[in-house]
Length: 431
Image (tube, rainbow, N blue to C red; front, side, top):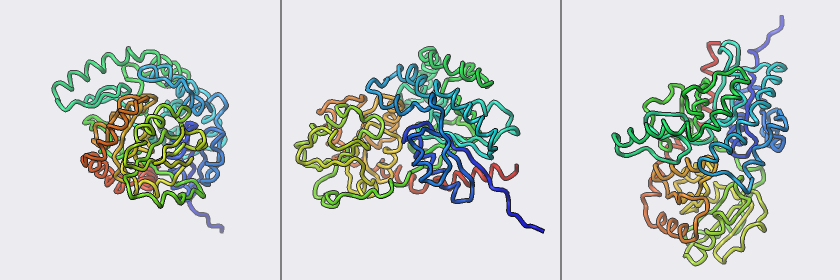
């Protein structure tokens, strides 16, 4: 008589092809693998080595869905309402039909118990159109600001924070919620056409970002202190803290980093996506800080250091730096607003100067301002004078540091990927 253990659980994790989407998904993949799951990751061809290096199987998106890197790195990135119409349609809706077909092909060949998708991966919507008993558990991994509608918040995408005056705020937000669908009608039409094509219900009167609430669990990669309170939040929304990826293998801190610390260290970055034009933020920051009594540390987001503008005498640069070595030394973080980088800064209690107005960065900027963790410059192309004033202010006013530290303390206490997988396994236990 042969003995066999419990069946191996299988998962398919889906990530749009960009570093800020793939890396948080791989954090979840590693935790599933640690617990004995069989894990495949569906994403762009550029990330195959990253996926297999984490120990997961790689599943390639079709070429027509493997486009986000090209869209995100465009020199003509959309901003404001344009980003939420043409930009969202191009980056997330247009690739969705091909991604949905690839999911179906994979599940036909290899049924799974769990599908995890980043919050912009719309290809799961066809799967969600089925009754729960006829499909895997579907979990959304929130890798950016929460976007679904609430009576307590203005509509997503406008960069407007909740009002401190409840009566005025409720009236203002009600008007905005009525107007926003008309302003964003193009992306609503595009998303509805896709939903119809995969047999899913259309948006109806819902805002386009509300489509994400259809997943079985909304696993948000932040802490409540960095998100607007919503008295009507979905019951299946849970906060797990950021999914922090480990540093790339072999990444070492340069010798010069250990020599800093005599003066305040200001870290400046345009991240790993919006770094094709360093005149947006890096250039003004270098100009603003060249004569300040600080040490400036730049990262080029993976690009060559030679692509950066000329460095003043108080600046150092690298393609990448290990944040666990850099951020404990850092007194101010100047960024265009990538969600992962913001959480790294707050994890270490570093106050933020944010200059972002493209993609979802108008919303990350609003949350930095609302939480008190830093200053938003309200533009993706600040002047040197704007950057200089903001840096001097966060260095001089401890309130920003204290707010960042408060959020960092909650991040340190968050449940992370282990807590998420605990909850997934609990949800699957009765099945």
